[in-house]
Image (cartoon, rainbow, N blue to C red; front, side):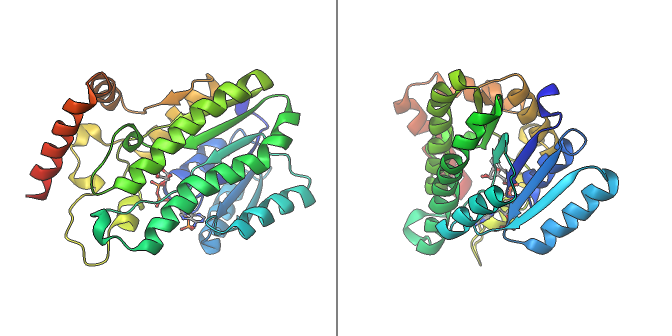
Length: 272
Ligand SMILES: NC(=O)c1ccc[n+]([C@@H]2O[C@H](COP(=O)([O-])OP(=O)(O)OC[C@H]3O[C@@H](n4cnc5c(N)ncnc54)[C@H](OP(=O)(O)O)[C@@H]3O)[C@@H](O)[C@H]2O)c1
């Protein structure tokens, strides 16, 4: 974990779930943490807790709705005005929507595209030029195992994560020779607020991390520890659960025609 010693890390989606855990695990090592999300009260609470334990840690918070281009630009301008040089960018903010695409709320769909794809890409675009000056820097993009497959009833979310994984891989090839390592973290189900947020009002879908078999669940602490290990070891991607890793590796070896049948059968059985 030497890479993180004295680093300046910007964590999006730092007000809950994996984002808070990234802050907790980096706190003993980092020089400065920049916590970004919409819920400022939560960010303040997390900041105060971190500073109480690590008084020398510089923790800044920035309230931003990352779906808004103006907020993303303000964040970049603020970093510049504060002379903060980020050398570890964690693009973690994200959201999903659980239910059929045909009945989805367009505002929610647009929010998924804006946060999961556009904000991640724009923030990376805004920060890469200054990261290139850091000597060694890293980007960790939080994707999902959903990005490896088409996922009915989470079609837009899964497609957005396919973008994240693919974008990360290509970016890695461009930036690695220039000193920036890029990693895609691809967790399976993690018990956070994610599933409550993805649940539609009044929906009777019972998909939640708590209905997932125990061995496929991974705690936020394990996911983050594995993600940070992957960055420290300069790995292109990480699936932080050995059972899931095996399942995904086997599934990816199957032809798409067979995968379509298996996924359809699984979804139909779940919806019965
Ligand atoms: N939990 C899982 O099972 C799971 C599995 C695979 C991948 N992931 C991915 O892991 C990442 C973190 O999710 P999580 O599980 O920690 O979920 P979470 O607890 O719901 O956290 C999501 C974070 O994203 C932030 N966010 C959402 N919309 C935003 C916006 N418009 N502007 C700024 N921040 C925004 C939220 O902050 P505010 O609401 O305060 O803005 C929150 O801090 C996501 O990218 C998710 O897709 C999660």
